[in-house]
Image: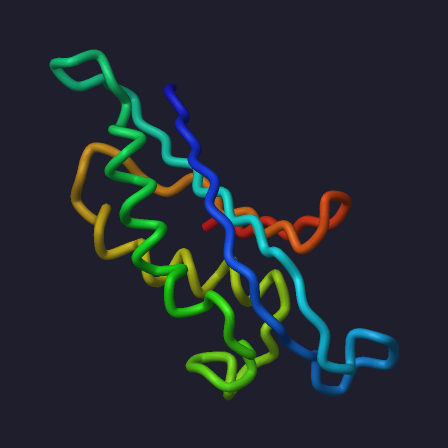
Length: 122
């Protein structure tokens, strides 16, 4: 099994509804998002998946999250923009790009600080 990962970031504000603590107030993070793909085979070049292609796909998704209040955009206008929900949303938006292909999404990690991460594993 081969696994490849890329990391991108975006800066955004958010707040958590119905949370009892500081995160209920508007605040910001530099969110780091890691996407890991896995495959059983390498392509003819000897790659599991092209890093630059994966970086570009992730960047396309994250652009709409950058420098906004996440609570104001879909789907976070309906669900809390927790790191867990961000990871699941990134997964749902990436999934159609890999369905039926030789690689699959192993996991999505969302780091909201250097010490705190949520991981979505489908």
